[in-house]
Length: 243
Image (tube, rainbow, N blue to C red):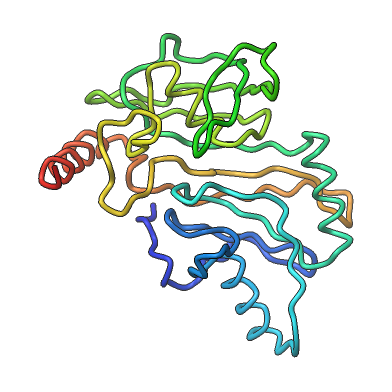
């Protein structure tokens, strides 16, 4: 079990070899830097490689995928251009299994199922729309319920497509927004601005040898069955105090 990390804490390495590096991204940290010049996970990983291997000059680091800023979990980087290209192809071909855990308000209509919808970007968020609309993209995921307790549910989500904000938007459309995700309907805002969505694991073929790689993030405190109701109640108090 692990609690939320702050962006200033040391990197937590989940997997590393000569070709790959996977780390635990804390919620609230950008994966890649932007015009704000805030600290980013990519900068931290480059600094780690530079110091550990005494590399002079610029460090190559291939960004294979991204997580939204408030989301925590496994982020995979490539340490060589060949690995970056091969991993990117696996992503394009949807040959990578991406499992997420989500703590949501309420209870899904079915304990397990498959959601198929179409998403369209609208400024800083996405919304479900009719598939015939221009720019709409198909979004598919499957899920199963781990437990329901005190008004919240813990879901395991298999992300079959990788659209922007896909899990957040699709679960919200089912009446089960992710805890802390006020952008998509959660009544509760976490004090640190993160949401209860974790990129729990990645399974893929190693880019340079014929073997399957499985990388898993530690379980966060909000995913432990005994905690969710007391945690949500605490966040409601925080939200009430700020209003």
